[in-house]
View 1 (tube, rainbow, N blue to C red):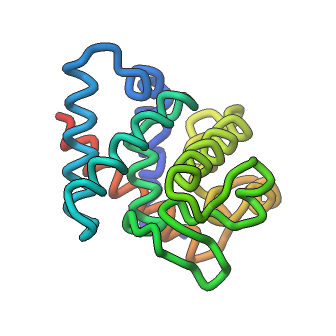
View 2 (cartoon, rainbow, N blue to C red; view 1 turned 180 degrees about the horizontal axis):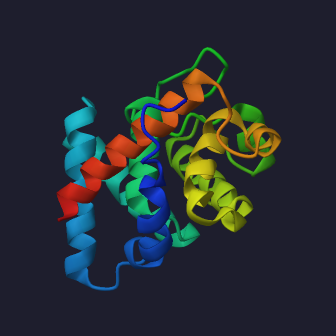
View 3 (cartoon, helix red, strand yellow; view 1 turned 90 degrees about the vertical axis):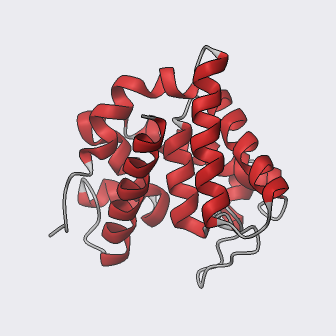
Amino acid sequence: MFRNISILFIAGIIMLNSSAIALASTTKQQDVYYQAIHSHIQHRCSMGLEWSDWIADSILYYSAQYRVDPLLVTALFDQESGFNMNARSSTGAIGIAQLQPTTAAAIGFDPTDPAQNIEGGVKYLAMQLSRFSQSGDWAATYAVAAYNAGPEAVAKYQGIPPYAETQNHVNRVADIYRQLLRAIG
């Protein structure tokens, strides 16, 4: 069914550490996360140092605001768009967070505006994490699947939908997340 269901990748780690990660309390902790995220973005994005700085700052800011693990946000946005604001999917998703215009509008954001795209993506992920919070160790995994396939699909199948695209998406986000965890030591 899955290449690997170490998709509990997010489960134990995030469930135990999300508040500490999202709201790193010391400047040193914040610097460690910033460096890992910035380095990852700079490696993946060819838009230059200033753009990488801005994206990393935005991810950290909105992740703290919505209490979401910034490493998870970084992994998700990398998989979604490779941090390309000009990314467009065949289904109409836009920007770094690959927000559907209808989804963005429903939660009050303009997906064509880079800052609103990132904030909207973080908020939408936070909404999915909240929606699936009762799923125990699978909550974050289901949230990532819902971000890709829609929350109704995850609810319908009572887990990750049997769509190859969604299963690959979740596994890829897990792989990127593990890389980021290694980067913070």
